[in-house]
Length: 83
Image 1 (cartoon, rainbow, N blue to C red):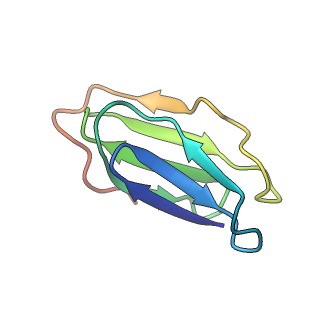
Image 2 (cartoon, one colour):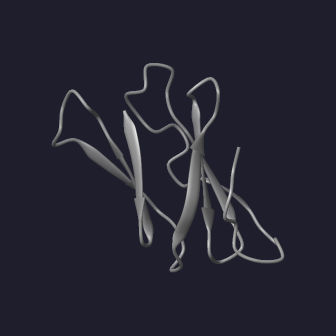
């Protein structure tokens, strides 16, 4: 699985099945950065609207567990880096 950010979306694409994609919902702003957790079970995206959104991926990497995402907000400015 690969994660791609561009504009107002983060898209997950399965490398084995190129046509299967999941668009992760975000705010109206731009996705400025993203990072996978070391275990590969979570993806986080930093947005220009001062939020971080987290999504949980299944153990097999085949489906989204937290489809709406977990939102962490109230940062001073846009979130440009995650680790």
